[in-house]
Image (cartoon, rainbow, N blue to C red; front, side):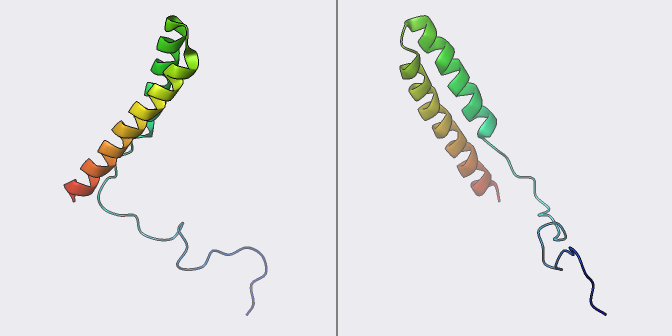
Length: 73
């Protein structure tokens, strides 16, 4: 019998089992450092410099969290 309409394949992401280990994410640190950098940049008179420094610092922290998660396995 042919089913009409949407049906998820058996190997879809929605039907697959999740990995048993918890993953860590560093995006919250990235967002926080951009906001802190912006506030510090506005206070210092150069908001774009604060955004760029915050973005670089957030990327470094997020990458460190990624590496720590990879080494944890």
